[in-house]
Length: 208
Image (tube, rainbow, N blue to C red):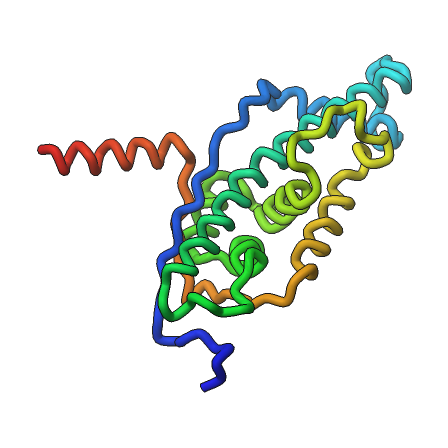
């Protein structure tokens, strides 16, 4: 067996991925207005009487709100990636491998998550989870903190999703890495409130 090959019979349980709610106070109606403004500027739907400057302002404000939400989602994901990498250093069969890197775990989430994680995301209404997680990782690969709106060009805000896609690809290509398989690496996905309630229940059972 090649020394680069992980033992196929083993199944590893990774730390859970815990997603926290966004504290952005952006109502769904604001995101809808962003989409409507983009369609009006493109002439796809009739205008509502607003001038081009107002439509552009609404569009850019909406794009900026979306970018911030991606940043905070990516922060949770990158925290999980670091936990997985640290966990792997404590597993004798995995410790010391030169090709088990952050990208190995990021790719597991975006390209090949366990079925139970994929099913949960779909139940949450997150059908395009691949693009969302990939863009969140790409944004976090560049920004250590959410950038202020005035630090970003109009071009970037209008097309941030395209830039984030490329940033993710650059991140994944920056280091050669082992491609983790969902059949070997399992993990759970929780909303933070859900995880807290589960822990409280477990602690309560332990005290009972």
